Image (cartoon, rainbow, N blue to C red):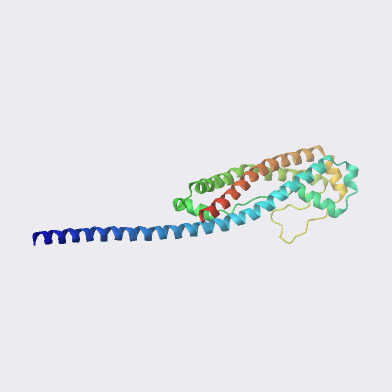
Length: 232
């Protein structure tokens, strides 16, 4: 009897331990399931943000590179070359000389993860690091952006003596048309030392800003690649 009682006590104790361990395992599995669901939701939000950033970045990079080409052509052109331009062509040249295309990263989900202290919900350490890198680079580009805008505004101000600026940019209705610029207008600006000095400074900062955007572009690609890998 004593042996049977001891065996029963031992079995009951074992059963209790097993049930406790099983309960812990179920809780852990449930917690893991919740964490994975939370991570998938975060990754889905990041994908949406970074695909939007990728699309915008591609456009801005193309615009800046085209703008740099137009500036080089304008700087190397003679007054006679410019005078013969049709108004549509001259207007397009002018537009690209001053218009500073800017990148506004879509960062809502990344900001929300960091501000809520939930960045660790993403298990991939490298992905977390690249998200922080993206946010920091995006902030760092603000200085170059401000300098570029200021230099572009100074260029516009210098064109007043030649009849400009033909489109002040900010505050214009989205459907407004850029006033026509003639080849003669461009020719006068091309021979104006002050105008050209301010224009060169604007494009200097545009080039620096383009370098910042190129670095950001690489990080966007990395984040999207790491995000897809995290779901495999």
